[in-house]
Amino acid sequence: MRYALEDMPTRIKAQHRVVNLFARVLLGGLLVLPYRWRVPAMGWTMARMIGPAVGYMRRAEQHVRYIMPHLPDAEITRIARASLDNAGRTLIEIYSTSKFHDRQRELEYEGPGFAAFEEAAKTGQPVILAGGHFGNYEASRANLVDRGYEVSGLYRDMSNPFFNAHYVAAMETLNGPGFAQGRKGTAGFVRHLKAGGQLVLLFDQHVADTPVLEFLGKPACTAISAAELALRYNALLIPYYAIRNPDGLTFSFEMEAPVPHTDPLTMTQALNDSLSARIRANPEQWLWTARRWRPDEKV
Figure 1 (cartoon, helix red, strand yellow):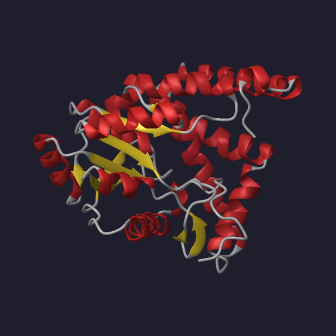
Figure 2 (tube, helix red, strand yellow):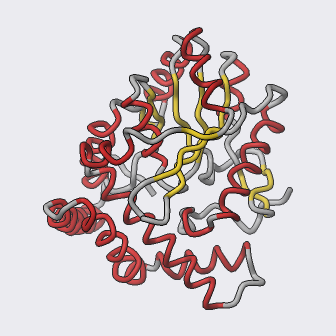
Figure 3 (tube, helix red, strand yellow):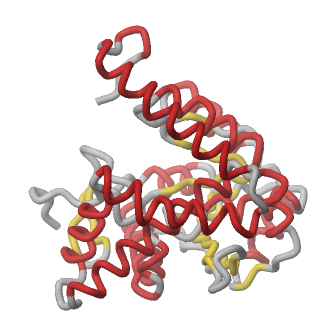
């Protein structure tokens, strides 16, 4: 449950303050390390300490087992732990600003979508880059910002307002202003799109009262807003990915071919299928702690 800060019960407010203090100390301490050390250090800390302590490890294992029940327990544990490692790396990378940009600036894009993206930018056609919590979704945006594109994002506020304040500030320092979900943020998001801008939208979170589509072979409530916006404003809808390389520090960037304009459900299922294929190829790089599936959903 999310509360406005002034309405938050004292007990919950105190818990949030303690969690935020721990996070600030941890992040601050790691940021004094050289980049090549801080990123794996944060990955290890998330995978081996924080994740198991707060239940993330158990939840990730449950979700991996739900989707891939044929895997042996040791492989399920390995994927869950590697997923937490990737999440930790992603977090400290977002706070690393200039050092993070330095690692991504010279990387090139693969896939047919990048040529379409460039052409749309030249002609003023809006673009929606649709992705998920896979690899590091901010790495690709950082690369595009360094190329001179003003790529904005839509983000969901975290339940801990104290942590959320500096996390959002870090994201905006890294890649420029974004839009918070809600009436005001959505209005700004749409204005940017209508003006021919480029936007990043992550579509792999559970959203209540949305259509149930197939994701990784299971039914999942899925927001169709990216497809609806693409149709309404004649925007390209391009699946994009920043796949973490074996060195753990750099990425391979890919933009797939734009999703054909048909109808919102068909287009969104195409996005689900695209991300599902990426996750099956690199399951360690998706955020398995996300409560993506609910047992009462049916296709």
